[in-house]
Length: 502
Image 1 (cartoon, rainbow, N blue to C red):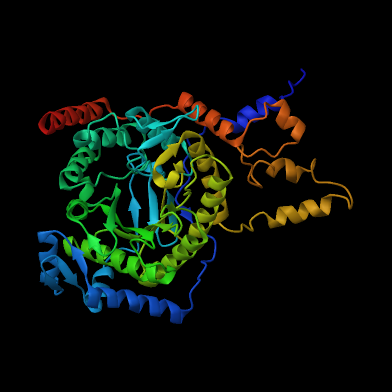
Image 2 (cartoon, rainbow, N blue to C red):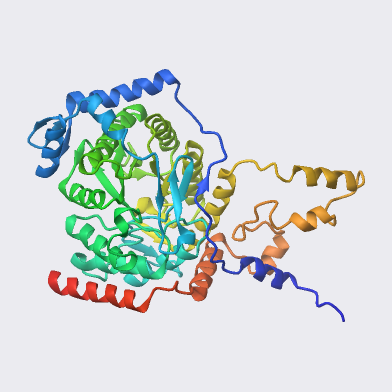
């Protein structure tokens, strides 16, 4: 019987079929890039210590100030001066790594000690839709991005505030977002952080999915606490941080730095300040609960000295990220950074250059929790469906790069060299036929065909291919199983709390 020959289109369809596989957290196989000498590193460390000891930092919350006072810091109202010995002792009790447990154990990942997790973008109020329209984000978009994160192999977490759904009232918005994260994906996720009440609601909803006592011994959320540079931790963030630390859930202690505006107009000066701010936040977590998982980190943009606008993906940010990574290894702390960031308003060359440069520096400097790896536009003001689809493919490529060199196939490759005649080619060899699908990365959304073939297939731009990919993924989405009784319990809780709040 004749064997039916597969067409180019059928082979392409097989390669582009949506996969529900998840990659484990990236176990680093590359050397770290250290941009500072030992002398420079210790000089920067000393500068951060002197800031905390001499200038001090505000913790604008009565309970937090009392925790610092009891620990031995100098406290004047909400202003705290922290001796370096106290700070270093506190951060020494932070786990250098921890496990993020998913409701599907196959999606559980490790973070820290050479393990990296990629996470989608956070907090955009605007959407760049499939037709290129820029509009307010809606709850439907939040659900869509939860589904896309679930389906993306290199997204290790579903994320947190995937977008700000502007069609949901602010006081109850966190309830809808948490339910979406818990329902539409079975990966780890981020909790809500705008105050103690929203953090407590997040904890309660998680308990309804995982069980009442599960959180005491398992971390399922890594949530975001942004410090207000210069040198302020406000009550809203501290209240949420206390809730999560007391419940054994991880926090990212990340100053929100606008270099030249909220930090000095100097890369090393910025580093001294933001490291001091992040270290103070991480140390605070240990006042709440010794051994609570905590992540040292930052979000940064440089400020244009011409316009005052924040800039993403610059060479200065790349160097600052590398310095931050080197300090994180010095302190033996897991470290958070942001990845595929751009200030561009369009999915264009600027978006590609900035995102790639930023993410490459982050990868080489060894960040453990990489936020904003998919969809990020306009300095976090907008989320693009097209860029999201392209970014998640690029993150699979960065994952492959981050694993480093693999020598396991050398012997079989040498055998192939012996078998192929000098001057001939390898295209039909057994070795090539057995390895062509896995030997090299083959991104589908980057076009490498001839001009003629590209034209014959519709002259699609990268943005158009991204739109098509995102649509196809959403069409193919299959909701991960959640017990009906659990979903009903979540719905009941949302309805009850919505009635109480509104």
